[in-house]
Image (cartoon, rainbow, N blue to C red; front, side):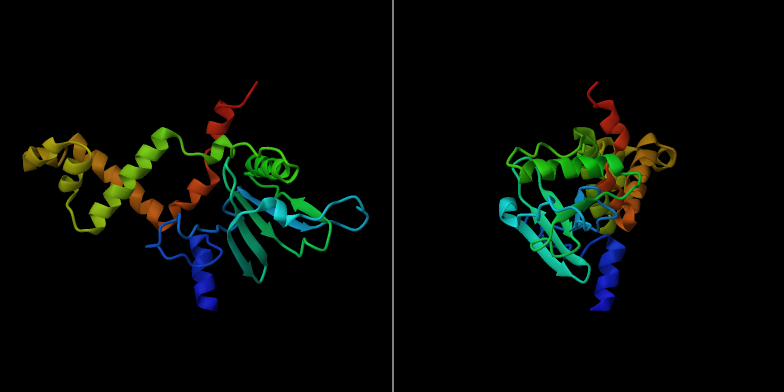
Length: 219
């Protein structure tokens, strides 16, 4: 219904996703404005007789497909990494064009389009842009934040969280020293950042880290 649709958009999703369902069982389909991995496909303008329609059979297997009022949203499997498509119009019967919003994610969107084009032309798509891949350090920190948030929501004290995730010695620090302890400050920062992620900050993960992509750009 309309209420659920508004809630999904607030979360950055195409449709509501059950939080308790693992992502590998029911992958989330993200709003294109939040995810530069989404390639926008529309009907080509008149006057382009050589433009081709998208052959969806060449993109099998489809991991997820949802039809909405604004078109069809697809998640396509690929050995090098999933493809995400938003078919704005019926691309089966018409010549297709790709739309790239002129925003701060232009480079990542262009890379996502290049990957799709390679797949459609029978080549290996290649990996997603580095900016959209979490580094080992980012993965470690994100895991720490999720575990800290679980502890916070389960009612654990900050001292308990610190002792489990950071250093067991947090349990034995005298109360008068704990108030200004470095471990307390560190666990407070981790929990605060985890809460910020939960309250919508997770959407920034979809945009990745453009600065990281520049550091690894070929010269």
